[in-house]
Length: 84
Image (tube, helix red, strand yellow):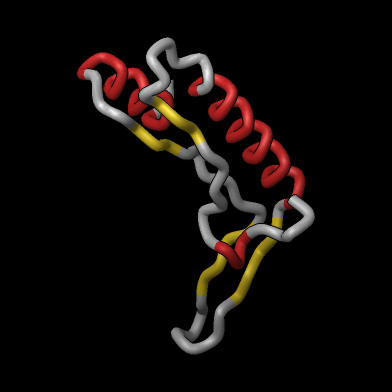
């Protein structure tokens, strides 16, 4: 079980409202020289991560008391395409 899956359950257990997301991304960024940002992309993994995030939201919608709300959020705005 991932940490993302534990937060909603713990919120339900102690009775607090929780807004939670499981991030998704299609790319990673880094720098070789400290000046130039370089991106590497993996669109297939991004699609799988997005589907996992959608499933996470569906699971939080099953919260019996409505205290847990899931939402979709990219990890960074520049590591996901609009199409995703």
